[in-house]
Length: 298
Image (tube, rainbow, N blue to C red):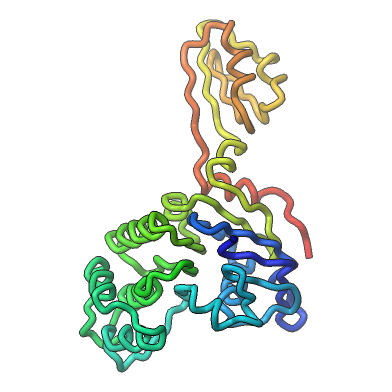
């Protein structure tokens, strides 16, 4: 069963359409990064998934539970961190988390204490006195404390220092290793790449791609630098179907290749290749490449 499934999910705010009929499927188990520029519809999607908004049309389900008709059951399966976490300022972090635990049927106090210690969060401090980063830690603890089968996290590391960011990513990996599903929206692509098994990319309210990260990388453009012992075979290299661009500088050739490099290397091999350097694309390069293409217009 999918952890998250949407069918033609659409949301309008007056005359503005924030989501345009997205069909999203997130299988149970992996970490899925949800990517897109500002205004793409990521937060709207998340609010629909956790039952804070009703769709204009279409539907969404969490582990088979419709987020409108069966909202309470769906919500019980989710640990949710909103993009702007707000809590009662006069309560201490510990009292607030204890209160949430009772509402959820009793989160393990020892789990709260362990998570707070990992994130260096003072549970005795009043939330109103905490820095933005420490308030974010309260939000992270409340999402993880009851060990839900699905974590939905919107910009979870906003305001965190590097040490807390690293600890948070370790918590995400551990949740995945326990069989939990993590749906993570973030502008920090390096942290998404560090933990995500899959990504879904959104633009202008439309889903562009949903794919395993390794498959995206295998199809993405990469730079290949070849150095030859003699004049390079420029024309045969340009003729390789996977080559998107070819620049020759003396005996060095710099190529952009999309897909497999096998045919390129086969063409180059008879010509006394001295050096081959492959620059593998990272998630940021893949993201920029997708959004530099022409995207569907409203």
